[in-house]
Length: 96
Image 1 (tube, rainbow, N blue to C red):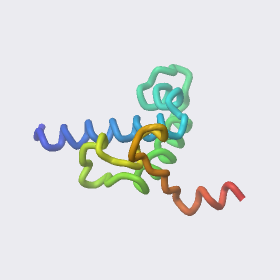
Image 2 (cartoon, one colour):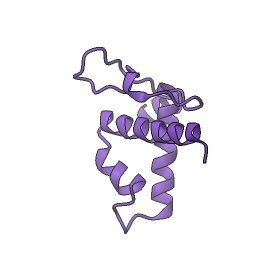
Image 3 (cartoon, rainbow, N blue to C red):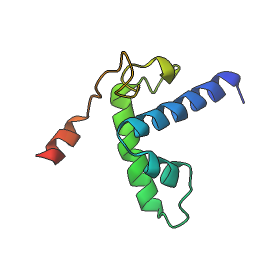
């Protein structure tokens, strides 16, 4: 496999993990993405992935997959230079 593709995949996975940590979904990340919950159904895993990847797409360049360490939106809120997340329009409709 091409080294560039491997780096992009690793950066994407790290960005997803950082996003889940920022929104407080670390437990779900390890349950569904890292497959630590053997009782998780396929639909639960798919729903979680769909929701988190959609949120990630609003806050990170998922096509180029640069190093997520330098992304201000993915930094923990208590770190210097951290920015608030942007949410997809459908998430705002669900809150109402």
